[in-house]
Length: 469
Image 1 (cartoon, one colour):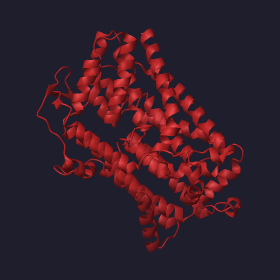
Image 2 (cartoon, rainbow, N blue to C red):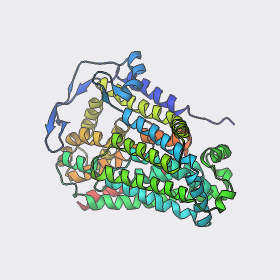
Image 3 (cartoon, rainbow, N blue to C red):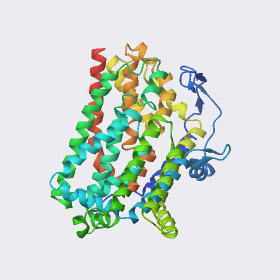
């Protein structure tokens, strides 16, 4: 029996760019009037102001330029995805240097020995920490360095690479889906909807807890199955290759204590991640500052490990090469959005959504909002971008259906978390899968049953929210 296999991530993203370009020849071009929102400090659409504009179909030239424009805007030299792509390469270089010290390998060996029989509890613990980052600060791009740490630990514990990817991606993704005070999503959406971000907070907390529990049980069940029967792993055919790629620890090294040098390197590693979280949370750091942090950490590790200059630089370059494909994936995903925006069809899809939502009963309205936002989130993977674009248009419609606006924010919030779990237009999803060496088709086989359960849970909670309002 022939086994269906999706093409590579690169081909999927390029085909999506072609599809979006083709749609610009069919879907009418249109725009909303934009007005400055002083509270957000951004231009937002004016509800009811949609009008058609001159068509701007995207041809072969636009398709071929999409990956370039995914990096930066040639007309203004403004960064698009180049900062995130460069950050990924620097992360690869940093871990290339750290791996030369064998510190992570030795630490994995020690963890495996000490947690013998209790490794499964790493899953809820780590997923809880990532969910906390997702719900508080909308952790997304910041999760990329953690794949390099978590996947080897999961493989050494007897699980597989999918388990490692799931712990990071689903953990942070479910936190973003159930965001409580995430300033990049919840607060922006609430301000755009003209409600306080504390309105609807209780329901979002309930969704967060229930969805986290559901995901933890799902991942733990899969992990136990893989450990008991490795042949049942969805990536069983690459087990040996993954162990060779992610693990460098010999059996003998598991019995050795960490050297003072290795302990210092691990301390630097820990402090670097703590500094990253603090910088993002309190000092408005983004890719440039975080990249500089990891460059500084690389130099400190080199000094502590007494590396010669040639070994330090070659290790950094080799590590960056390992993640070069991830950087390309991120820019391809951004290029897809560029084609849609330059074809002037983004606002048209929003207008279709606005027209579709009129004259619906409260429960039908709020669940339809959820599905509309879910669709829009596939086209606009940025949670803040989706909030600024959709909330000023969709939130006022709630008034006509007797639905509190904060429920629209909650529906948006639950929908905007979906791209972090499955959408091929998300650099976070495609980048994480590439770092875990998991194909997109394999990830779909793993995530789709869980995704269906999450969607049903959210719809049930939104319906309860309408009934109790």
